[in-house]
Length: 111
Image (cartoon, rainbow, N blue to C red):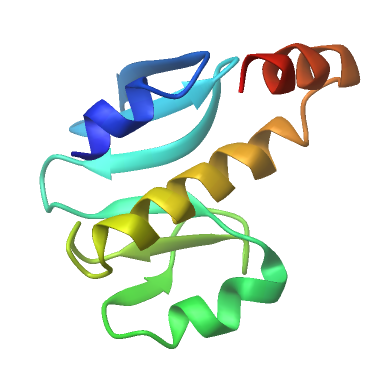
């Protein structure tokens, strides 16, 4: 479900990084990282949403990522499918917001 959903988002590419981690990227910037080893998924989040997200069972601060900006879900089914899609879409939007304005405009026109 996650791979199909991410690849369905405009401009998304995928690649393997750091062993068995399938990364979904927008202009070479990762917005979702799915571990094929342990079944976790790591996503960018609003720092304001971090505490609420990490308070959920099975959700923790992502190791090796910016503090309070990335979370790891212990399994793909920690949250309902609709919420997972929302979290992925939000993560992608947060990454797009850090791209140059011209790229942001082009990507928002595709959405």
